[in-house]
Length: 152
Image (tube, rainbow, N blue to C red; front, side):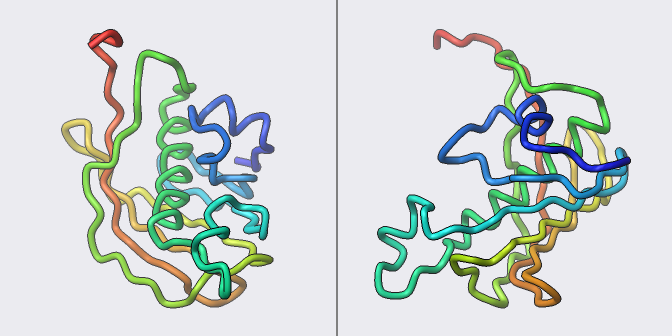
């Protein structure tokens, strides 16, 4: 399948500024894998405090960007669009490794591959690349849940 622009991404992810961390999908093969892009700019809110003298993208946000790419893959696999009646949760993060700092001006290429799906849990192998350099890798587990009572 071909890529997706930001307007299409907004249909599949409920995230919005400042936590929308996927700018473009380069390729998506539902049921298999996705490659997406996060353009990292000095205008990101987190750079004001992490760190003013040496701006580095927090690792937790790189993992979040990978999870958002994985969510798009899940939603495209099931042709499910973001709505107010469901939420996509992390269930687990294993084997997370940070190999290279991500700095303003970097283009983060987000790769997620479905490893398996059972009992409502998706397992992904993910990696974030800057050019040909591995920045981050992690195994992610996620699930899509209906929101029972929004007033509680």
